[in-house]
Image (cartoon, rainbow, N blue to C red):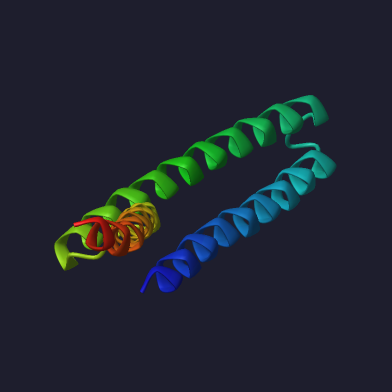
Length: 110
């Protein structure tokens, strides 16, 4: 499920990149035709790129929020939570092993 969301994010970013390429081509054509000076074209393109980057950031953040909410709704755990549980199990196993190793000595003295 998360792989699908990741693919959607990448597809969105790819679409933004493709749109930027098309915008750049269109602006260059306008500049070549004399409908826009090269300086105006360069500034306009930089504006478009900046807006595209902002939109990409907004899209990424919105998707992260949605994925997080979906994970919560489905009761899925994060990798961090799994790692925390693995560490806890390891500590408990170590404590159990220490108690089991101490037991025979206590039984011999008791």
